[in-house]
Length: 430
Ligand code: CAA
Image 1 (tube, protein in one colour):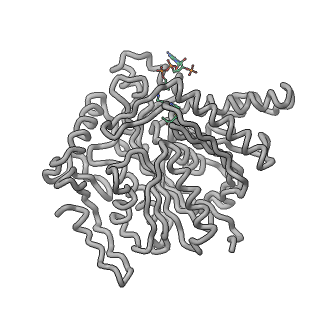
Image 2: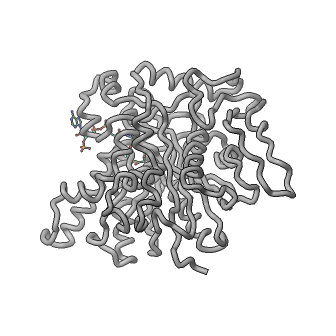
Image 3: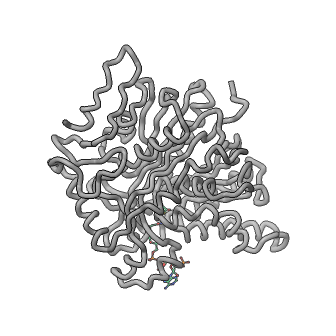
């Protein structure tokens, strides 16, 4: 039976990596005018992962904060889906590690989704349908977790970043309610951005990726408008996948100019800049500070809108555009929950950003090199790299072809009586 409350996000939390590099330092090292990064791309800093952080640890940090701050019973979770392009194994999903490290119940379906930055949107769609159908009151934990990494000195380097967003989906959505309109999709096989198994850095055709992103936006927005009956004036907010904030600006401009053309040049109540300031800018501050989160970029923007939004954000409708290179795009809509107490003070992106440690260029390069070494067989030799014991869980390297995670506290044993007890030590390699 359909829930009278609808289906949507009941809780949202973001993991902001502990280290960051100001883009002015990167510009200086690359011999680039700083304004190109600050104004041309709209980025101020990028999150840099410590060698003991990876897609798994960030997913656990985001989820652990979510479970604690919103006081969620982990036994209510029956579906765990992780969206990521930063897979740590060709066969074993990130979700399996996260399930163990969080101590989730055995009666839980676990899987990863992959389609570059679109993956978490695909996971949310799966969760939405499951919660509206066979989930029968159980909750879905959806996590977007990624490290955006390009070659040192490449054009993509200033658009790097990292982070994870955890979202609890269920039929009492106090944070964000999905609207029941038909979602709009766009898929096309294009080589705009990809990362072969043997590489830790992505390969990208920058201009092709921008062109493909905008083509997907134009097509999905038109399709959504046609089937939903909603139009420009119905959206208080427009949120986009944000590889870098200037891309959201390009996306917004496309929709604005399309609307101007539709109205034959008259009837717009706001100029382009003013409209962008009110409908999209309030969501972009996490992206400016953290850079590209790939699968989590759109949802870090949503969390940013909720965290900073004043009373006017309550009940507001937002249109969301998700884009994954390769490519797949989707436009859908939802309404912010009516009571900000449900999320305000629980997201804490600003606090995490404030507590970060600033790196210089040498520190950034050193972290990259140490991360590469830790990704090799035999790298686990004991404890964490200096500065690595900071969170709930740390990645300590690889031993006997198994990833070694140190978790504090150890996950609780699951409650399902007829299955063998969960063995926490299997995850630590000790
Ligand atoms: N002051 C102010 N602005 C300046 C400037 C200066 N001194 N110098 C240059 N600029 C401006 C340019 O005019 C340009 O602005 P417009 O885009 O408005 O024209 C902007 O800075 C960027 O300059 P370039 O076009 O010269 O950029 P570039 O060749 O260095 O590459 C990029 C930019 C293509 C985005 C590159 O960073 C890249 O390849 N990034 C990774 C790919 C990416 O993020 N693609 C986005 C769509 S795909 C996607 O969304 C999926 C995903 O997450 C990867």
